[in-house]
Image (cartoon, rainbow, N blue to C red; front, side):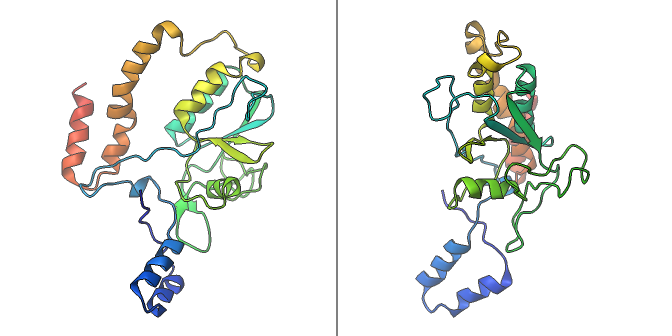
Length: 246
């Protein structure tokens, strides 16, 4: 999928006019293009279409795995304003992983992520007292979540989202898909969890959980995004009725 949000810095875009061929202008635009946010994830019909998360590695209780479940190795970056990130924090707390996995929160509103372009996204406060509940990035010194992704992958062109499960040892993003992070917290850290016997996805209920989650996710959890980011009336009403009809 191509990324259509182009940096609108006038001094940079004006360079495009100096290129004599259409191909050269296109190449410059591609160079200046940057990752989209949820605001841009709409189709030509005006409907919101969420793109998949891109970091999909898995922490394992197997000590020989690339990402073994070790106490103190991982950090969870969240925003209290993001429900997807908040469910990861809920799992961390309920499973009693406070001493095994550290966490911190960005500011609850977006800000400029770089001075060189106009991208808006999750940013860290400048001090511990700037915003209640938000923390500076003491691990990597990043000013934004965007910087974390660029540390992990300098050529990354996806979205800069939370949650982020970060590997302190390898200095990289392990996973940024909340549904997978909560599965890891539920099963892979039991040997260092405060509540290891608590199974939030028991085998005898998995089919029912998956069935229920299917309509809750599509109609409600993701439904609010499909309504909020819809750019035309028809997809807005379609999603609204889908949720209310349940």
